[in-house]
Image (cartoon, rainbow, N blue to C red; front, side):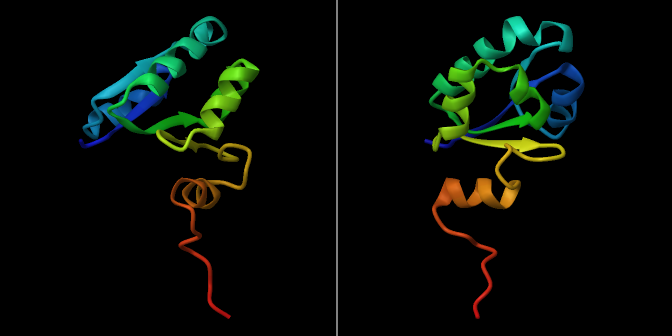
Length: 109
């Protein structure tokens, strides 16, 4: 079974991914994130065809504690955040390391 990328966030955030060919997305307008973002993320986590969830890192602040812990700890699908900090854990390098279990950028001494 092939897995797909899903994007969750504001329509402004998801549009670029849609233009690039991403078919799975959950649009949650900025003024509705407090009420709807948890449900959108939970639906995406439950979708067995999703392998990667892409979100803006600032949107993590709108998630409930339980949903945030679940999505940040998820191995499949793995969360990739874009923006300033990247999942609050050191950015894309740490996210890739968590997803596959090794540090691909580690330098040999």
